[in-house]
Length: 194
Image (cartoon, rainbow, N blue to C red; front, side, top):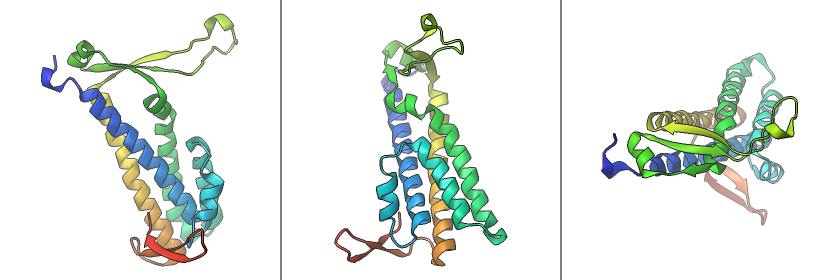
């Protein structure tokens, strides 16, 4: 039985996980921007802003292969491909965290779990309508949610490392230095690379 003063742990962890996923998606977009044009990511932003996360990941791999074709580029390319593979693994359950139907019950929270139902239509391979299910239920324990938070937060940290490696390889500048960005008005606007 959990301490009754901490019955809101599901909200804390789900909020952290949602922020982690948001930050991961943001960093994937930033890496795409660097791969398209190391000086200004405007073109990449325009082309990819409406793409779902699942579509951005293969684009990241494809652009990385285009930008880093030589053997000397292999360490950066390998790092990007590994990152994309790991990001795709957490992406699979991302929608449940962001769009799922979370049923909070103080009694369940006291027992250390919360229930989520994913709101996607699912059916069996034979396509039988009678087997279609709207909500797939799953119970998440506090430990499982904490592990998911750590996993996605670690990917966000790695995304910064990938961004820095891409920036350094493409521009020769050390990560964290100012990167020129062209504003909508055509003025070169320096800002910290994110």
